[in-house]
Image 1 (tube, rainbow, N blue to C red):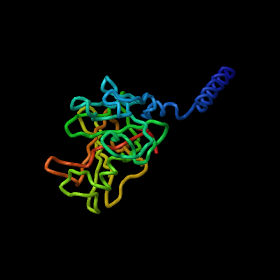
Image 2 (cartoon, rainbow, N blue to C red):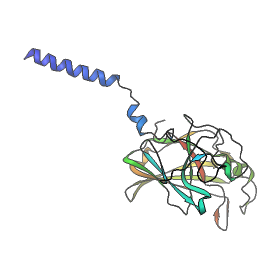
Image 3 (cartoon, rainbow, N blue to C red):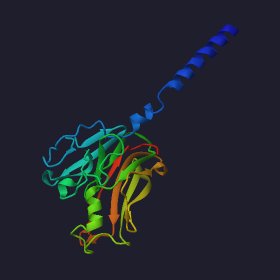
Image 4 (spheres, helix red, strand yellow):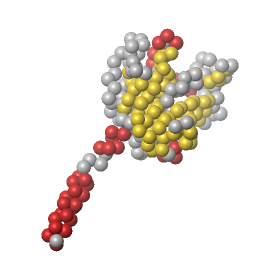
Length: 238
């Protein structure tokens, strides 16, 4: 009996040692949306763009699915787009998916979200879970509008001290909201210029994320600042 107990303890010790030697980030890495799986090529929409548009109207990375809506005869996409620009120059709407910082947070690819109030795009989780957070930064177009004005606002020119641009992230579990996280893309004469970590832990266990952008630059039809933001490593810990 003593030999049997020793054998059982020895096997158990081996199992613990084997588990301890496994890559700690393996499970977590499969959960995180890094967007590196997407092959970037000239889009189906317009040869002037360089981003990924999925014909199934969603892009999948890690535990996440980014919905897309191709709108107005295929002239633009709402929801999520995967891109890998390194050029930061903004000249026209075809530069909508360039970043102000000019590089992904990690790897080559990143995602850009266009929050259109007329579309119900969302990021859904393949399996409901608690999402630690994500890295967010501004696009080149948004920074250009902040610095130089958007050409449509009733308040001409760039942002002043009292102007702001706010991203609101809402968590969902089924049809119930679990909470919101607010992140200022611009405020008090400052704007996001680097990748910044946004903690989503307070949203709890969720199966969907939705996004809304509000701000002070408006006209009769609503917000005139481009409602875009870029993100990477969705689901990562800081």
